[in-house]
Each structure stands twice: as C-alpha cells, then as structure tokens.
Image (cartoon, rainbow, N blue to C red; front, side, top):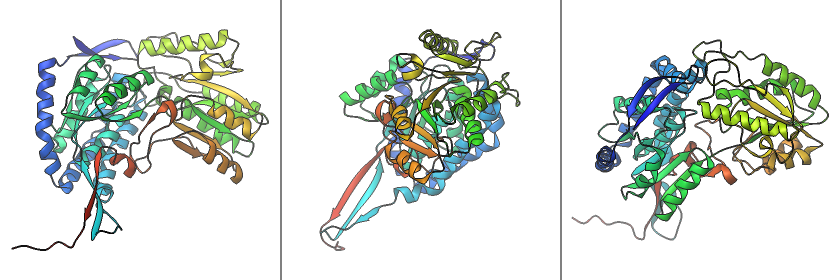
Length: 461
C-alpha cells in the first residue's frame, strides 16, 4: 500500500510513499508518549524559540515549500508562497504572544488566592485536508506545540510530501524525538489511533462525514474534539455598497485556492436593485481570469486537486442546470490535460438543486436576487452550514443587522472572509464546533485548571 503524489495540472504521478504499517504506527505512538513529559516540562520560552525558528525556515525557504504545494495539490504559485508566509506568521505570532495567552489568570473568591492555570493535555491527533496543505496544519501546530502538547499528523492522502515536509520543518526547528510526527496512514486507520489511550484529543478539518466519524469515535471515549467542516458562505451586496470593489472582491473570494476553500464565498446574494449591474461586473471579471500552469506566476486559476473533485463539481453543476438554473458563464470542464474546470456563474437556482443547498468546492458561483434586507438574511441563513459570511453595505443599521443575525462563526463587513491568527476561527451548525487561532484556539487543548488556596502559605523549615 502506498500514497501517491500526482500533479493536478498534468495528471502525472511524480512520487510514491509506502504507508506506515501497524508496527511503525505503534513505534511513533510510543515516541509521542515518551515526548509528553519532556515537551510539557520544557520552558515555554524554549518552545517559543523553536516555533520562531520554524517561522524563519518557512519564510526563508518559501519558494521551495510553495513549489511543493503547487506541484502536489495545484494551487497557483503566488497563493502557495503566500501560504508559506502565513504559516511563518502564525508561528511567530504564537512565539511572541503565546506566553501572555497562557499566563495564570487571578480570580477573586473567598479563598486567600484563586487563579486559573493552563496546562497541556498531551498527544493531539490532527486529521488535516489537502486544500491548504501547510496552513491547515500550522494553524493547529503553532498554538498546540507552543502550549506544550505533542502533535500527530494524519494528512490527506494526496499530499504526502507536504505532510513529511511539515514534520521536517518542525524537527529542524528543534521539536524532535517524537514531539511532532506525521503518520502516513489511510483514513480507515484513524478510529484505531483515536482509540489509543495515549491520544488525548483530536482536531479535524474536512468534510461533514469525516467530522461526524471522528466526533463519534472520540465521543465514545470522552475525548475532546475540534471540528472545522464545510461551508457555503454567503457574500451579500446591498445598494449602498461600493459596487466595483464588491464585484472585484467577490471574484477573488470565489476563486481563492482555485475555489477550494471552506471560507470561499459561494453564494452571492445581491439586492435586486443592483443585481444586473453586479452580475455584469462579476461575469466580466470571472471571464478575464488567466487559467493555466499553476507554477506560472501569471496564472490566476489552476486545476482542481483531484480528478474526482473536478468530476463531482461538474456533476453538481449539470444537475443544477437540469433543474432549471441558468448559466451566465462557464459550466464545463476545460479541454486540456489536468483537472481544470472553467470558472462558472449560475443564477435562477431552484431550491431542490445542488447549487442551492450543497457546498460546491471549486470555481462555481451561485447568484441570488434579494428583495430587501430581511430576504437577504433569510437566503444567507438558509443553509445547514455556518462558517463565514461577508456583507457589503455602508449603512450602519444594515451592518448591525448582519453582525447580529447572520448564523456564522465569522462575519466580515466590506471585505472577504479570511483566517487571521489574531481572531478565533471556526463555525456553527454543520460547519463544526470549537475554535482555532487567537487566545481561544490555544486554550482548546489545555487543561483549564482552577486553583484555590484557602490560607496564606507558611514556609516550613
């Protein structure tokens, strides 16, 4: 059994790796368990220095890591370089600010002294996706490693080189001897790893079925989980918005990472007064995108990550059109080597079609007309997902309504949704639970210990 690296731009295999067998998994679990007291006992400042070194490696070698990401999952090289830089940022952010996030917090009670202490819980298994093969891992690993936890990575099967590269980077930075390891195992092995008593918690970014399976396996054993699942993010445009900027940002928000992002805008809900003007601008800019080799810096849109993903997207569009939706542009596979799909805009979308209720993971936009603010909110919330939402209006009262009434973990006004180490990241409803990033994220995998000391301590000689 092997894991294969296949270039999505050509469909050609360029590397193959043997899976870790049961003996190798056990060896790595034993290493991780032995690393728990060492990692916990290390000075926080020392862990911060290692994390800062990881940031330096990512920043100075970003061309190398960026090209690896592009070859293995197809993102445009400019986006891959930006991803490496963002990973460096999250490492440096926690290296600089993590100590303050984890400092004891005093509380006033009837006792002589009371405080909250944050302590690492041990081994955390990270089950990560392919779409941001470095960022998804580092946004977990940076806070978890700084906090003193031990990391095990089960990455997506189509990015084994990225998985091994991340282990290499963290080991070069000083996290060694089992403190962070990659497991090259299939998805079927995850439940058994979760069941191991040495593993204390699981974080997963991925699909609803994967999240449900991991949560069920961990829940039976009363183990903590954090889930970041799918999204069908609304992008709402009201009459007071800067229409040109909104349309330009909308295209960027839809095709970011070749359209393969949980927080990519997918449903564009536009007030009927400006719908035609917005749609004309949106389609024009969508059609102007440069499609090509993702290693070419001029390319704005590359291939989808796998042939299956491309074909599933095409099938969702075909079923949506068959039910009565209208294609404004695109709507077909690109006739060339690799797994490309033409950037697409759909409108007049029936409620019983895939584009209305499912997540479309690729460069396909669904455009909806809204009669007024209440209708826009109703359309935005008419989904089982609740990850991000972007609303465009210069009306302060409308902004307050969107902030208060959108069912989402992230609401961005007059900008596209993005992850930021300084803000908690996560969703509601079928988009998952728990948070990554910021102070909230670093505390997800900590023992939040309440301490109460009744009397003033006496030094006994």
